[in-house]
Image 1 (cartoon, helix red, strand yellow):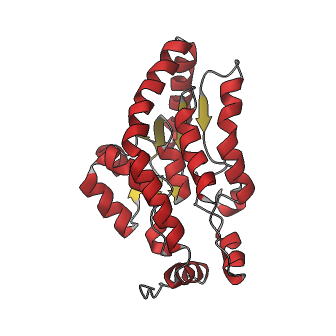
Image 2 (cartoon, one colour):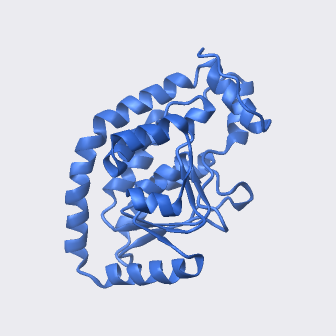
Length: 244
């Protein structure tokens, strides 16, 4: 569970490291047949904890996890041999939306919203969105959403294939519980090998774009636009980007 509820489960550095590593623990535990990933309270994840970014910007250092850390978070989810269900309530923004997208099945309540908002902060989309979204919803839809940073509600997300199901709030938990139980009762090796075969193709298709997007993500951390985007967000005003 993503657990930072006072900040809508925004990802701090310790949380980022835990999300990277937890999938090895899931695979190593023979009592686990399926993992359900959700957020504490009424949010899935609001993105990166920007209070840390603000402190780092003031000290003139990059504030995002290094590329190897971002890479591990994405690939370790794809490499996990057990099925992963993302259960989403409320916002799934920034890195949070791409944590959800890296799951095998994404199920959301009607009030959920999905948004890769990197560009609104002056950052290139580098947490997997630029690599994964075109495969899920097509190139034109993906570019529109990634270049505008606009949110998508759960109903629309299900219609375009970004997620599997959009359900009324009261039905979300029972539906996910039933699906998890079905997977847990299934043939574990057959399910695991099926997932790994599909994800092998997914990794082959996304590897180049993912590495390129990570590089551009890191480059934008050293721009005036990134610093302005962070300040504007924290000051609750519209950013004034300069292209520098």
